[in-house]
Image 1 (cartoon, rainbow, N blue to C red):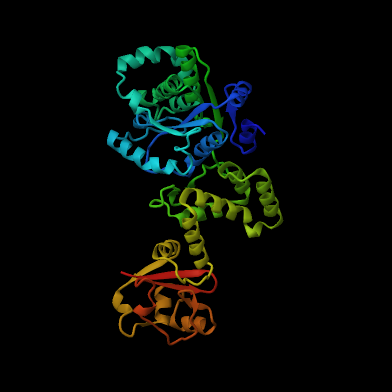
Image 2 (cartoon, rainbow, N blue to C red):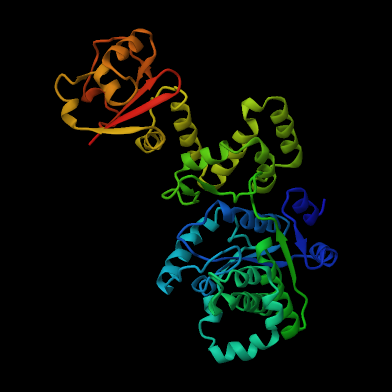
Length: 426
């Protein structure tokens, strides 16, 4: 199976400027390619994984990947896939974001190998010093306005008279084309990859490279990562799923993938993991035979969490998941337990509620919303359905004191198998 065929099998191929010629070039020896990321935040997110994984697949086949951080283009804003203008960032914000993202890239690409190391570049380094007149004369004159207006990303915005498109964002594709031309001239970069919404920007680069250098350059695009219902993948009800653990904890990251729908999970295994086809085929067969076991989703979540956050973070995420399925808390760390706290209803109480003789469990069950009355709370306790810190508590007279607080701050209450509440000190 050729690299292009593998990309196609994994759902990572949508179109190419010349598939036959590119396939031949990739078999002739190492090829330099690039993909750009506009540093709009200080972390990458799930939506960035497809291009990162595509670059990694090329590197695994011996090619040389370049990650382009849009220090210049990030201050302009790409109109592709946008219905309105982006808020412009300052140079300081962009520089901060690039520095933060740099460490995340090392989890996906090998920057230290002597054979075909990955490279990180910032397009501000070659764009920042170019004057407006130089850019118009040396770049703008090679691309017609007619071809720019014909691009989907521009035409859709121009047709919406309520928002339109500024000259700033209209010029974005020229800047991206300039990037490809510069990388072709400087690093012999022959290929740019990106999602289908980048097709117009990429073809500007191939045209500019041909006209200014008389050199061949290719563009390859993969489909946007979407769910079976057509919505964008990587968003939840609470927002974006980030790669930075401070923004999205490893536990929530794991849960995001373990909750993938049956309709999406095989596509995600192909696109976002490096599992071989036979393993994915086995998981697909198991999904059809026993969907309730969610083996495919668990495999996806394990692979993704280990790659992005490491084996220790995966172990902690699995521990937090087990707690919400009734496992003993044992030697769970406070950091892991805080992930549990974020997933269940939580109520803050004053410390005096737990000091001295403490407060009877029946009253706390009512305060936590697990029982409508103390009478019902007593019945639930007598029926064996109440757990304190995931241990069954059959004593209706039991009082909860500071000695029961986990990490001196939390009390985990459970009714039945899966109804939880956390009480924490105010």
